[in-house]
Length: 137
Ligand code: HEC
Figure 1: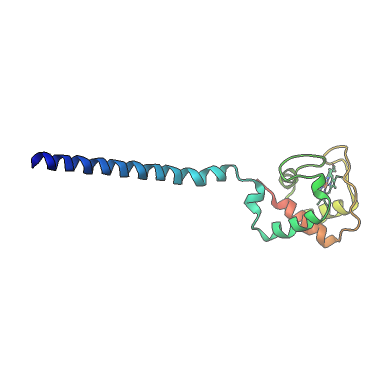
Figure 2: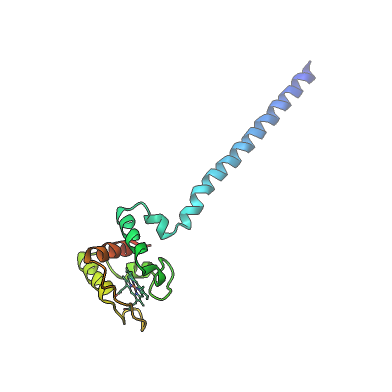
């Protein structure tokens, strides 16, 4: 009788440990999962829900910008993250950079010129620039 009770207790204790272990694993996983992507979050992920981002990326995709600019890597032109780090998103800078995209420019980032985009409206160019200047780390 006593022995049987003892075995029952052992079984119970064993189960409790098993459950405890299981919970601990689940906790560890739950903690690790949100932390990992937050650390490696790209600027696209960071701003993708911003209305400025949504409006700007649509117009950028419809133009040729992406053949020379990437968000976080310099290719022909500076990365948008670099441009965003250099300029505050003020009305003045948005106007100045929109004119630069429309008329072309050279000499700020190097010797390679950006060709003009004369068919772009001022409004479209400004929406693109607001998107670019949003991409701060
Ligand atoms: C043929 C390649 C090319 C294309 C296409 C292009 N760019 Fe550029 N872009 C450049 C280069 C090169 C520079 C650096 C110019 C300089 O040093 O002044 C630049 C610079 C810029 C800058 C920073 C200007 C400054 O004075 O700091 C912005 C903003 C920009 N581009 C946005 C755009 C947008 C928006 C588009 C699409 C409408 C676009 N670019 C298309 C090559 C390009």
